[in-house]
Length: 29
Image 1 (cartoon, one colour):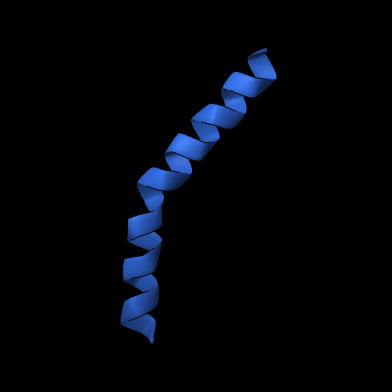
Image 2 (cartoon, rainbow, N blue to C red):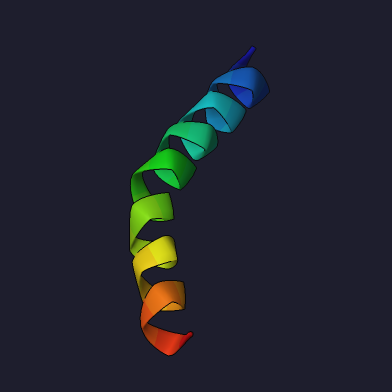
């Protein structure tokens, strides 16, 4: 159960940083 919560937290963090990653990729393109 703890492991599932960590995975869920990781997914939330990934969603949070995804726009930043996309912005950086757009700038370097």
